[in-house]
Image 1 (cartoon, rainbow, N blue to C red):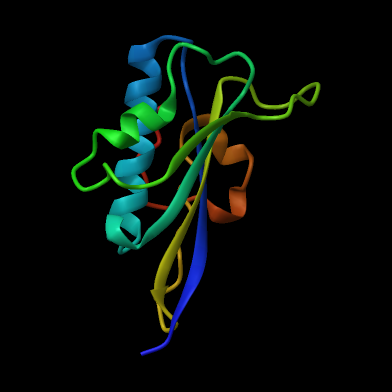
Image 2 (cartoon, rainbow, N blue to C red):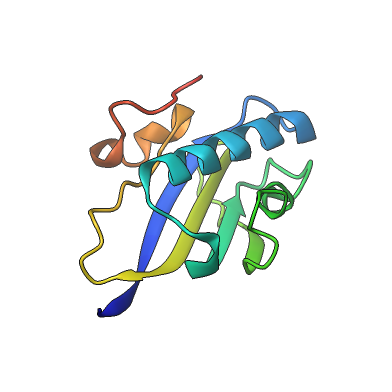
Length: 130
């Protein structure tokens, strides 16, 4: 069987800059990511979170690190480049993983207010709390 590295993008928004709100949004995003894509944490190469400059209550990677099997996943938090007028209170992710070459199509979770970033990738059955 042939293997390759693929990437999944995703994003969500947070109602306020609190650890509780960020934890809830990141958990929801990762739950949806895993629900929609057959991921084994051992196959994850790395996961980078970026947050807009108005979010500093906690590191999103701290949430991912608590997931079963994710203790050894390389995680990184960075600040998203600021562009005037861009979406506020937004958490984005970029996950690279190893998978069989015949992997089913990837579904990129864009939740809550982040749906405006990629309306072409909005999941029809996703969790979309505002």
